[in-house]
Length: 503
Image 1 (spheres, helix red, strand yellow):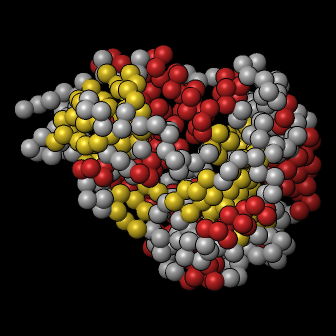
Image 2 (image 1 turned 180 degrees about the horizontal axis):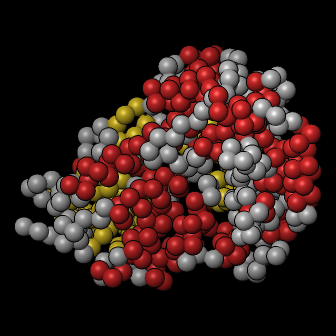
Image 3 (image 1 turned 90 degrees about the horizontal axis):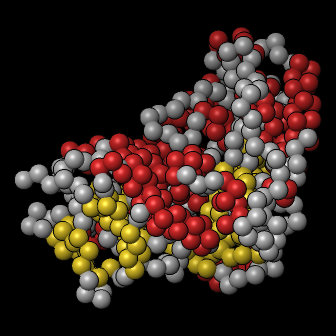
């Protein structure tokens, strides 16, 4: 018998549950969908914060979140780029900016010129030809314009502290009609066909629904009650499984970027907030003990202002994130080290795909097959982009790095890297979050030099010289130098509710 979806129940406590609940409520308000969040309370190992991809801007716009309110309520900062130190060995450095590299040479991407000069033995940094990268290095910021010129050639993400971000999202969701119930999930009451009829709480209450979302992060509290937890393990490729994170003193005018620094068994990170900084150490417990990892973090960031929090994870994906009438969203479906800042982005992909495939019948299984295929491919693409940071270009020495780089990568990534090394060609598969330009930033930055260029591309860039492109670099420097300091846009220390400074 057909059973329309009238009641949706989302379980969790972090930003993912509120982003999902708000999205479903707004998308299906015309169907009178009742959305309830079972707020399970803060997870003891929840991350202290996030650095996000630019897609977070689009999500905020869809949900009606004003950027000025976000900055004031959460103390967020902007993110123009990620800076990676020592991934290729001592004193190595590269930047991945959220923006264009140069301007097209005819119909040819500018990065093809950079490949050509690298092949010729005279490499130039992509940073010289990106207004976002130059501004990030100068600790300057401005929102892109919509004039179609170089001032519109970039975008940005955010650095977000989790607790105030969750509070803001929860308040917005409740104002718009999401019902919130606090409680501890004890059991799932199942129908004879295995579908969830209701959630049973520790206090004896019963929460009925037609469709259920598990947004409890890596704990996957709901999925573990109904599934055997069949997962595809990625730890051979990505052995990092621990992260210590803490707050530290702020910088007066922080650069609008996330910084990572390779360590003996993983990598350290730093991300600015308006009134503090976030720092962390991502590492593999097979190569470094928790005590030594924490000691390394304290040595790198001695002025911690909070007790470090330990997060334990295991890279991999759930084979069936949509099982019967329960869908795992975000880290309940895929666990991945936070290197590329895609945690919230992946949750958005899950929510967006669910909206597109939303079932008319709660008992329908047709949509779940396609959902699992699409979300699985999204997950594989994010895994590959993360893994490419370890494998592309010169390698760092040490047991952890040698072992990680010696493991054969997934075939889809191996083919992509082989083709790039042979001809400089970047091939995108379906459902990739990172575009051709993102791969160019990564591969050029890691010093991955192709053997040659495709014949037609080489012909188009062969006569371009450093003298020809020098004026472009000078113009970009002038544009970046005209931007205000990043701090000009941030919440003044100790102030909440006022409008941020800046144009």
